[in-house]
Amino acid sequence: MSYQALRHFADSWGLLFMTLTFIGLAVWTFRPKARPLHEDAANMIFREDDNV
Image (cartoon, rainbow, N blue to C red; front, side):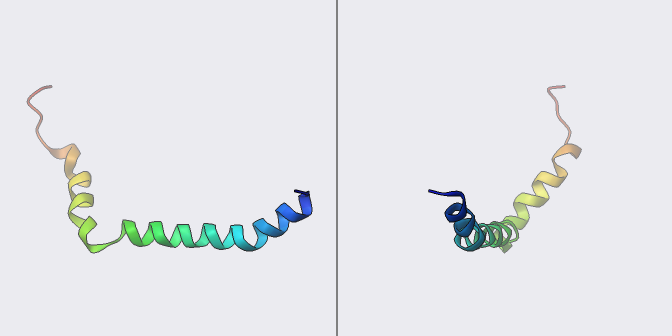
């Protein structure tokens, strides 16, 4: 593949793929069922640990 062909692919289909991947990951992160997991991770440092 030549440089021009790779650049054309990256400017069209590559950009579309990266955009759809970003949107998919953002939607997956902020889905309603993930809220308890995020709250648990945020409060994890405040839990008492008996092993210390």
